[in-house]
Amino acid sequence: MPPIDDPNVLIGTDTADDATVYRFGDDLALVQTVDYFTPIVDDPYQFGQIAAANSLSDIYAMGARPLFALNLVGFPASLPLDLLTEILRGGADKAREAGIAIVGGHTIDDPEPKYGLVVTGVVEPDRVYTNAAAQVGDVLILTKPLGLGIVSAAIKRGLASDALIDRAVAVMSTLNRAAAEAMVQVGAHACTDITGFGLLGHLHEMTTASGVGAVIRLGPVPVLDEAWTLAAQGLVPGGTVANRDFLRDAVVWDAAISPAQQWILCDAQTSGGLLIAVPPGKATALREALRAAGALASAEIGTIVEDPTGRIQVQP
Image (cartoon, rainbow, N blue to C red; front, side, top):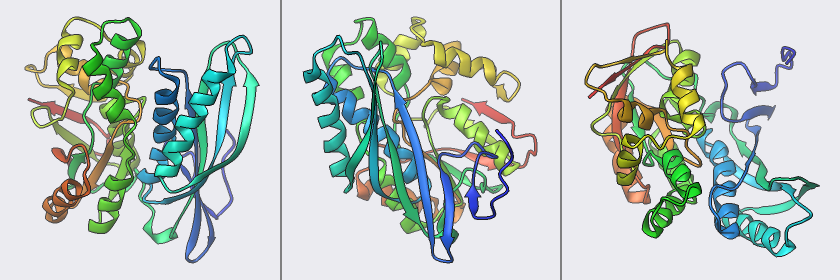
């Protein structure tokens, strides 16, 4: 990509952030993101909900308010259109829950179904949350459990119970709206959402962009219970394997961290939670606000430390 020289581009590609931010004036900036993927559950309506929640998450991670969205669809002409109707209905219902409308989009004939959204939002330029502003001493708080990638792999192989599928779908289709509103209310330094690069991959983007390091404590990290067993059995998706390989030189694992635990922390998530770097004096208030807002988790999982290399230490 060529370098960006427009001074109104407040956030572009330099820091691998969650969305782009374009300033229109002293008190208004546009936030835009795009995301789509192939089905991870069999139910088309649930797939539509999950994909829409995942797309909206990038807007929330910037501390912004979504305005509207566009559909992005790839769909095989050989499949019944009723399936596509259900996918779009799921996305529309989730967008409605977020308080926005889907106002158009684009569809292509594709051998494999794909769905997602282009989402446009707004934020005040001086209130943008980025992944590049974490500060030494900040507390790291996570708002959803991990293990979604591993559970999704079990679903695709027919190895997940109905109860586990229902739990995973509930987590993935939950909007990060309430968590973002709590963050904005209390105030924080930096934020990112946990998706395909896993907890440690997205944290590495944050530490690298911010010029700091991090210490993660495994004990308080929220995880879907069944994911531990699946990881120990080696049921790990390719994206999770790629994440751990990519982080080989960026993460220092304590000797007590097992291979299964490493998989969990590197697990490629779909529509995961927010990872928020908050000043220590506000950590308790943020956790209380998250609980009051109904966030799925409000776990204090680590701290930002001084290390300009962006290295992450993982402790039990």
